[in-house]
Amino acid sequence: MTVAPEPTTISVGGDYDVVIGSGVLDRVAGLLGPDVERVLVVHPPTLPGLTGRVTAALEEHGYAVHVAEVPDAEAAKTATVAADLWSQLGRAGFTRSDAVVGVGGGTVTDLAGFVAASWLRGVRVVQVPTTLLGMVDAAVGGKTGINTAEGKNLVGAFHPPAGVLCDVEVLDSLPEADLVAGLGEVVKCGFIADPVILDLVESAVSEDPAKARTATSPHLRELIERAVRVKAGVVAADLRESSLREILNYGHTFGHAIEQVEGYSWRHGEAVAVGMVYVAELARLTGHLSGPEGDALVARHRSVLESLGLPTGYVPGRWDELLTAMRRDKKSRGSTLRFVVLDGLARPTRLVGPDEALLQAAYGLVSRRGA
Ligand SMILES: NC(=O)c1ccc[n+]([C@@H]2O[C@H](COP(=O)([O-])OP(=O)(O)OC[C@H]3O[C@@H](n4cnc5c(N)ncnc54)[C@H](O)[C@@H]3O)[C@@H](O)[C@H]2O)c1
Ligand SMILES: O=C(O)C(=O)C[C@@H](O)[C@H](O)[C@H](O)COP(=O)(O)O
Ligand SMILES: [Zn+2]
Image (cartoon, rainbow, N blue to C red):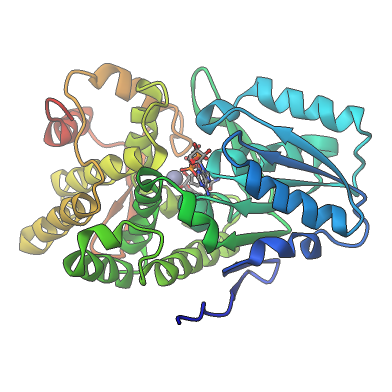
């Protein structure tokens, strides 16, 4: 019989904890604090069982629980959905000492966090991510937001959670494609900060490619913890993205552009995977990566992502739309585009205002018919 390892607690700058383990979902009440009376539990339509467990755990502790189901996936991250939640909070009389709990993937934690940030200018939020991507990235760090017709995450706030509960058991029901998309952000942490992540992924894939893509992979718990440590360290040092935090945006300028151009039919982690190959090629074209080592690092982007089943190419012929979307990236300053690129493995830096011809050439290097 294998015994599940004890939960791991990772502190984010001493401000709040991320708890990772089996069965930790039921600890939700302990994170709310003594003053809270009312709790709004925000969840997608796909998780009635998990939401019921969270709700029961809260009711057992005497909280007045209000449950709000929101549309699935990216359709949750709209002003209309946020406004509906504000109405629910208003009708139920939520005060500044009440709280929001987000139960779901990154789309739900982004929305729940934003609603908590904006209600009465900020109430407590506890995040219970139920996807790999939510656990390793979206629920940690206090970046909250919704989309507008013009682009991804264009409205939002920095609002750290009071705590994050990553119950790894819930990943058993996650569709494989969503698990793989979450591995895209894990791999990102490998390239920008912790290369052991890449070694672990590569060794898992060489042992058994199918196993590396499953929730029960023996490496998954370690990968989750390593990615959370990367994110926690970065956001503790630079919550408001004045500089260092931008490294977490590796691959996102092009990735977000794909998501928008594709009407959010691509998973975020898939689009970021292509975005990372795009910036790796851009780094080579601009001399940030050079020589055999640079070539090997670009090739490693493709090999590790493809070994997991993530996409590394995008269709040709969409340059104008992609460029328009990239201009709305939050790292842009005026008409100057800025990218996170690598000077080497785990050596992120900024590329400011590259020549448009090079941007388009990098697109040429990732574009493939049928991608
Ligand atoms: N705030 C941040 O720092 C940050 C970081 C990374 C990504 N994000 C955002 O996160 C979003 C992507 O998150 P995601 O990949 O989790 O997508 P998602 O929230 O759309 O979830 C993916 C799918 O999995 C389903 N699901 C969730 N948990 C499940 C479970 N345990 N079992 C079965 N099905 C389950 C959902 O209903 C959905 O259909 C994007 O909007 C992205 O912009 C935010
Ligand atoms: O936490 C961050 O900072 C990140 O950039 C993490 C990203 O993985 C995430 O997708 C984030 O939502 C992107 O933020 P944005 O500022 O580019 O909208
Ligand atoms: Zn992301």
